[in-house]
Amino acid sequence: MPSFSSKFSSALLLTAGIAAGALTSAAHAAEIKIGAPLGLTGSVADEAKKQEVTFKMWLNKVNAAGGIDVGGTKMKVQLVQYDYQSDGQRAAQLAEKLITDDKVDVLFAPFGSGHTKIVATIAARYEMPTIACAASSESVFDQNSGYLFGTLSPNAALFAPMIALFKEKLPTLKTLAVLGRDDVFPKATAQGIAAAAKAAGLNVAYEQLYPLGTMDHSASLSAIKATNPDWIYITGYTQDLVLARKQMSDLGVKAPIITMVAGPAYKEYVDGLGDLANGITSSSWWHSATSYKGVGVWPTTEDFVKEFVAQEKSDPDYVHASCAATGVLYQNAVERAGSIDKKKVRDALAATDISTFYGPIKFSPNGMNQVRGLPIIQVQDKAIKVLGPAEIKNADLMLLK
Image (cartoon, rainbow, N blue to C red; front, top):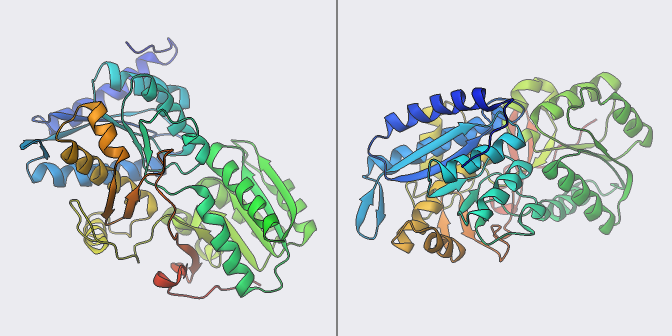
């Protein structure tokens, strides 16, 4: 049985009951249960709502087609979700509730490497297959029990191609300043780019982390300004990066290249900054300009993008695509397993080697999707342009003044 702290139990149960009740009613005939702890309120609410949107897009298409084929029998799918309010402890409690009380057949992990790691620890205890669509830090998968699988490629795939591109486009590039949020994914990314830059012969003139909840970056930004870097690289979540970019403008902190990860990958970042977003570069794990084909309810990238735009009136980003692919992956694994038995599904997931609208999915021994060419992007005239890889490039790097 789950163990709720007395302080939070009433509020959690009320929130969870309302959410689960509504979904259960909407999917009355469901037989396969998917559990999803989502941070629909709190600091990762923007990102979690993207997960919710695409989980339901996939769910609706599968159920409209009669459900998932399990050994020749169509079984409909039910999504049981709870809002853990962006609190890691609550995420763990609700993951355990989904497993032991709701008796779900699989978990779709929450947004972010930190919360995914917390939920995966609980899931491993119960040998519950868990699919993460928004966790790219290798540390989440380092002690994988064999039941955790992630659709994003490792963070390490982000660094070398970006450094090579920037050195090509700015031959005078010598110095880098790195500022990162002291949290699992942003910290790993900050440390990763610094290490890769040093290996590529760049001078990392500034390298610091900022605490969670930081509401003023002016001291760090002033220190960066003093180093006069050629390239500034800042990691964090959307609201961190919007604040940092505005303060950079206020303080006159400039560089020919400014990268924020994963800021420009998100529409809300560009919308929140307006003209200040122009010229900011980033990395992403997927872009709508790709043209993949494969299994699942969306045979091509174009099919997914077209349906998403019609529903949401905006372009999907990598979180949308990766999380939609989570459903495609699970359906494919169950159909190959011919069963919803957790061990058989786990084995089918481990043996995955498929193409999808999102791109290829084949797992490394640690459960992470294997490395592939990832898009390097830049905001130009308030639109996202792809600088590389060459096969999907649609613009050249624009240097800032």
